[in-house]
Image 1 (cartoon, rainbow, N blue to C red):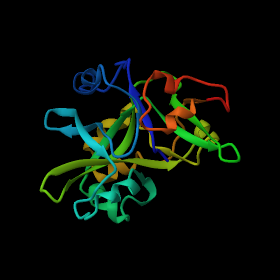
Image 2 (cartoon, one colour; image 1 turned 180 degrees about the vertical axis):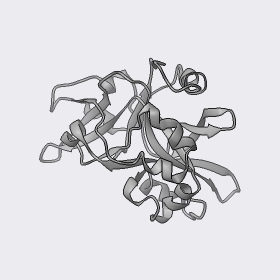
Image 3 (cartoon, rainbow, N blue to C red; image 1 turned 90 degrees about the horizontal axis):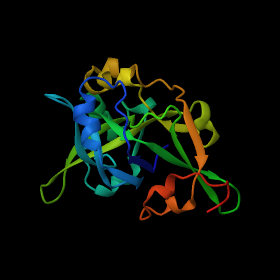
Image 4 (spheres, rainbow, N blue to C red; image 1 turned 30 degrees about the vertical axis):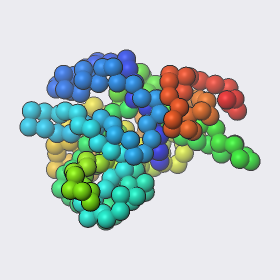
Length: 228
């Protein structure tokens, strides 16, 4: 499950796959959004003729046949186990419309009893930034004939530290899987959908993140459990 995430620098180039530094990491310099919610337009990585590059898309996939844009609120996530069967996702899956969603980390909420839910932030233990979620994209045409590019985040069964806060997680792809996910066959992409453990740091953060209008680095600062 992923209904809120963050993307902010500094971004570390490290030993990224060739082409990603110039066409993905460098263009992200200066981007900072600490509370990315469904329906917002965000950078995603797509395969281009000149290699991987960024494109702005709206979070919440709308298949070409959708009549009501409100469908997007139920398609922010796509279960890896049913990409080929679910009507909302199967065309994008079969046609190789795959993308990478760059993130610094994501949020999950844990029921603490009563009406309180404690938000947690999950980020790379090794400091990798950005991480890349597996995603699918689609183009939809609204009633005025305008094209809208949309995307969804692929999720799998949670492993390791994530299970402390949720039983599902975004599929975080290692660098060696990025090109195969973007450009490989459906069979090759399928190989990167198996649930796997990602070394993560998981810690409680302020409840202020629950309001998507709230922004700022304070949202990802650790707090005492039950505080804020």
